[in-house]
Image (cartoon, rainbow, N blue to C red; front, side, top):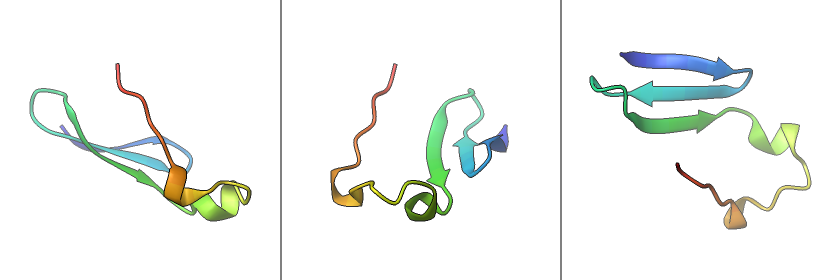
Length: 45
């Protein structure tokens, strides 16, 4: 599938079977200045 612009500032990379293999969050520190990047957490389904 390749790369998909998911939302403004968020890019997802997929492999052939529609599995996400990469996430880019562009300019995250500018969009969320209070965010502590050392403690960034995510949840997968």
